[in-house]
Length: 117
Image (cartoon, rainbow, N blue to C red; front, side, top):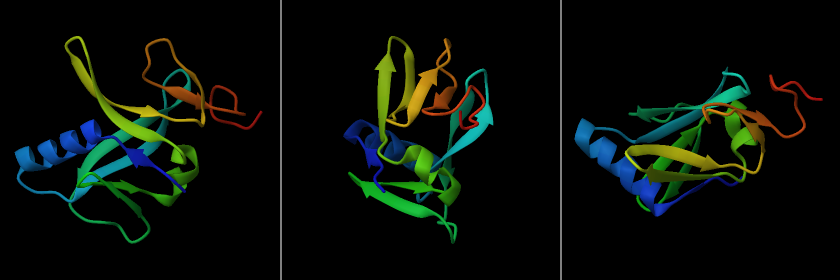
């Protein structure tokens, strides 16, 4: 099980924690939503939940719940700037398609709502 974190993403996580004044890391998840089926969720975390996996790189921590591990296996989290927009972005080998607006995605081998084809 591998999930990587770029230096830019780690720097942004550390910056957000510093701005907030407290925090352990970034909790990342996957929820059912949008026209393609799934979207990533992000929230700063103050503790590691008992069942979460912890991934660390470049001085930052990612926390992932077990139900999201297979979806995120092999993914790399980056923080990118495109014009005036800044956001976390995954390069995820498990993603089949992304919707036109880029907000949601489907998984390889599933239909638009994530059901195995």
